[in-house]
Every structure is written in structure tokens, then in C-alpha cells.
Length: 152
Image 1 (cartoon, rainbow, N blue to C red):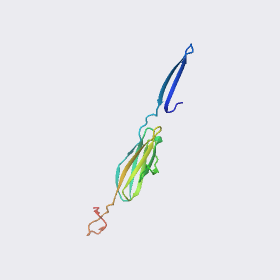
Image 2: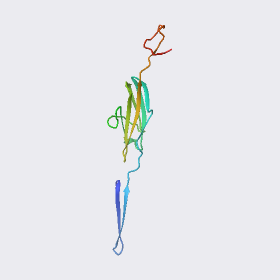
Image 3: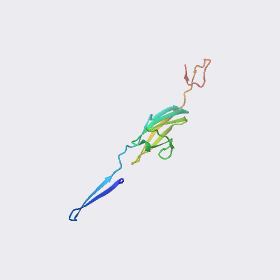
Image 4: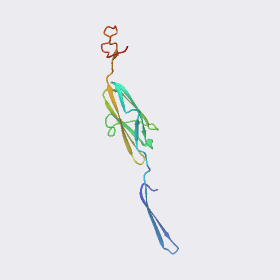
């Protein structure tokens, strides 16, 4: 069987008088076209309260999802990161919890049967301080000195 690359075919035909005729054809076999790798995220940024949770879901898109790998990191996922399972349809879920500081989550996917392609997606997680709710009326019996917003 012929592989990918340049090949030459030569046919030699001999007639009844013993004379040869030669025909030569050079041709190439190329890799089939593949789509590029894409990561589609449910959200591109989050705002959560300190210590909160950031549920992230998405989908890796490629002609051959079964060839894809996915890594995530709060640093550079293309250099280091943790593997994340991908469903047969390319879907994935990740839940980060107890987030204390603003962070950027990187997701890096590499796919390909014949031609490897990659994609880096990021989502920004912004952490805000929780607003303490309670009674802000100092003359009330249930007054809460730490309350920043009256809960009614």
C-alpha cells in the first residue's frame, strides 16, 4: 500500500516487435483535510464571591474528537496542567471551588489523526467580597453590627 507522499508510476509496454514504450507519471498522496481544534466555553468570565465555586462546561470541537486531549490550569495549560476527561461528543465539565483570588483558567486541547492542531481557551474568574446582610438599624433588637446591607 502507498503512504502519504510523492510517488512515481512507470509503465513499460512491449509490442510484438519487441520495442518498449515507457509511460511515467508522478503523483502525490496527501493527508485528508481535518478541521482545526476549537474549544467552546459556556462562559468567558465569572464573578463570584470569595470562597465560591465556578462551574465551567464546554465542548471540544474537531472532526475526530476521539483523538483529542484536554488539559486545564490556572497557569499556562499549554506548558503544564491537569488532564480533563472529554465525552464522546467532546463535552466536558470542571468545577473549581473555594476560590480566594482572581484567576484566569486556561484550557488547552490538542486533536488530530493526520494533522495535529491545538486551541487555547481562557476564562477569567473575578472574586468579590461577600456583602454581609442583616439588620442595619442600630435601634432594632436584631441589629447586626457587621451587616452592610439591610435584609429587610
